Image (tube, helix red, strand yellow):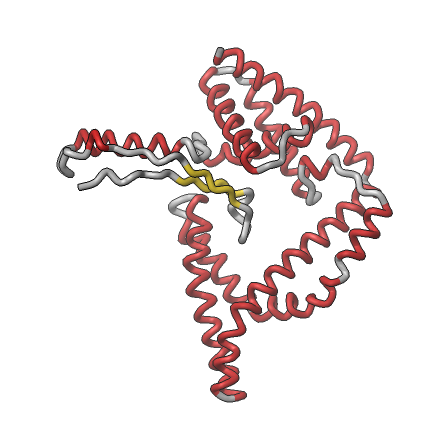
Length: 295
C-alpha cells in the first residue's frame, strides 16, 4: 500500500571469471511510482508500466550487450583505447568507456557498415596474442628498467615467508576447488556465462564447508575432539590466506615473466605495439563515424 522507492544497482566486474575480481557498483537515484499505486496486482497495464520503469533503471547501470560474444570485443576496444590514448584510470571512467564502446558496436552493426567486423576480428586476435604472452594492451606499452625490477623484487621477499602457507593450502584444498569449478561450469551451461560466478559461490559454499568438516573430523580422530574443533575454526582463514598469497605469487611470476620477455622478444613486442597503434587509430575513426551519424 506504499510507493516505496526503487533503486537499481548494477555490478560491472573487471574479470567476472576470476575469484575476488574487482567490481564497481553503480547505483541509480531512487524513483517512485505513486501514479501506479492505486492499481491492483491484477492490473496488467500497471504491472507492465512499472516493469518497464525498472528495466530502464537497470539498463542505466549495466552493460547492455546484444549478445555475450560482444563482451570480449567491447572490453578489448576499451583496453586498447585506454592504453593508446591515455584515458582516465578510475572505475567510473572505465565503465563509461565500456558503455560507449557497447553503444558504438550496436550502432555500427545496425548501420550495415561491414568495417566494424574487421576491427572486431582484429581486436579478438590482438587480445588472444597478448593473452598468450600474459600481457594486456596497457602492459604491452610498459617498459621496466633494471633498477626498478631489482627494487620490485626486493619488495616481494616477504612472499617467500608466506610461501609454505600458499603451497600447503593449494594441496589441501585442491579437491573442493576442483569440485566447485567443475560443478559450477556444468550448472551454468544452460544459463550462460553470466550465471557462472553465482554457481561458483553457491557450490563453493557447500563444497568447502563439507571439506572443512571432513578435515576437522579426520584431525579429531587422530588428535582428539579439541584439535578437531580447532582445525574446523582455523581452516577458513587458512584457505583464504593461501588463496591471497597464491594470487600474489602468480602476479609476481607474471611480472618476472614479462620483464624477461621484454628483453628476449623485442621484435615480436614491437610488432604487437605497432598493430595496437594501428588498431587504436581505426577505433577512433569508427567512434567518430558513430558520433557523426548520431548528430
